[in-house]
Length: 241
Image 1 (cartoon, rainbow, N blue to C red):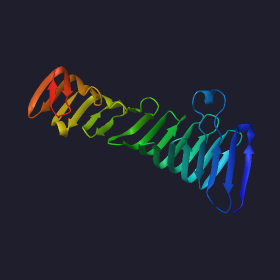
Image 2 (cartoon, rainbow, N blue to C red):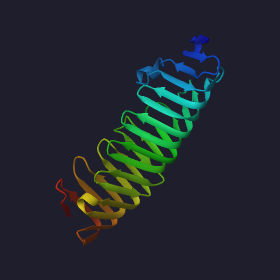
Image 3 (spheres, rainbow, N blue to C red):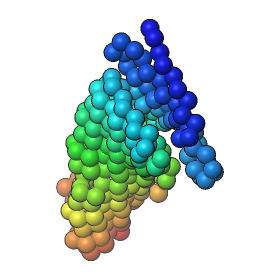
Image 4 (cartoon, rainbow, N blue to C red):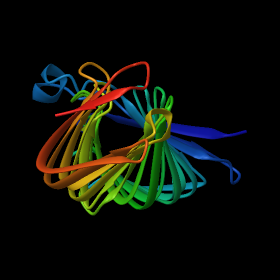
């Protein structure tokens, strides 16, 4: 198999093209200067059936069986483009993104570097026993695994399911916030609760704070109030204040 390899020193990028219809790969060298100092020093690569590179704009376009890699992150899909100057990239078409134990599937995903991903269309993410879904999800892996679901969604764990019109959460802390029609259901604790806003602290404090038209039901007992605090014990019991 014949291969052609050119070192493009001006843009710090190496391109390797496999002849005879084989898969093409482009390897982007690690950023230099300020980008390297900021921690974004991991090299990136893009594999696909066909790859085109515009040396003027620094834009790479890929079609067919696309796989983008950067450090511990992997994104696969049908089509992609990547800007070697800005580190902005896009993958669309049955997208699967993986970073350590986090897995996200969606219609399209964009990134402006290793610290931020935006997933669009039928988004579903899983991490160990936790999952989240929505039409649009932003993920910031280096901010305590911060997830933002601006158009409403669902967050689930072994303790139950949490839904709201707007959601955000820190997966590492199991701290979730829901605003607008916030609804919490926990079968293990035989608990259902809702309010205009719900702050759920599952990992350390073990409580949920409900504000605005708040109510909670457990064992057919209901409480209502403008603000309710539900303390969630590990043995499944709850206490409401």
